[in-house]
Length: 379
Image 1 (cartoon, rainbow, N blue to C red):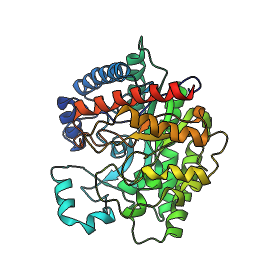
Image 2: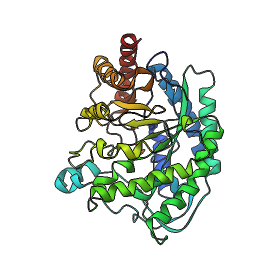
Image 3: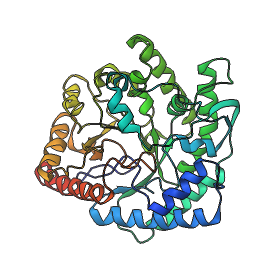
């Protein structure tokens, strides 16, 4: 995996706005109205990936991906790749605590959002080999002749799957968690064998705290310790330096008053095998947490991918602000151990676009400009 050895590299969390026609097809797959392997769908996904990679390179993103073009959602896509799930809208059993504090805002925010969330009702096994191989081939084809530094593909963590798709089959949550780890290992290994950086998406390591509000902090820490163990179990055959992980507090513009502080979970997050740690660092609730790294010594092998763009606002960050955010982290952990990123995805679910697509690309370009400013200062 490339690091910021000569300049600050730029990347993002994963999802990018899909074309409208492709989004409609993905929603049909989600509703069970279209097969995941439909030839027309596959062709549109391949075209979208080619365009998304090209556009990332044009705006200056150094470490690119497929924009998650073939996935309806960063976590729920797995129901098309795993056996064992069924039922309608039974998998998601709780909403963030701040939604309860502001019910009118909750109703407004969720208006028009459609997610099919089945539960686990039978044994889980992986059946998505063709789908992940299509992801790999689409990205490889798009990278051909494209001037970028590196590429990654994202995959849902066992823990975040367990949060969104509830257990109705296994006798314990831990048994379910490790069944998911064993199943998802096949996807993780496929991505690694293709020579592509693997990103494990782990919002559960922070977001689940305010979604499971009946737990004490100690209970929540015990939960995510198990989630990290599941990640390490599932990635045991992949070198840590070929992986990164992403954690967040939920990609929505809400109060976030119940978010667990980064300082309360960071020690557990750092036990995960991936060396790159992507996290929210730009939004008004979490930007101040750069200070955590004044107290916490980053392990030698780890590096940070702080968000320097807020993925929920249509403000386009000034490049000087982006540079200041980067330099602040570099002063604490070293310039080679910082890669500029985004707080979260710009299309976490295909039909949920808090940022206008054209503005999302303008924000990514501002990130590249800010990274260039920071690089001139740091080198």
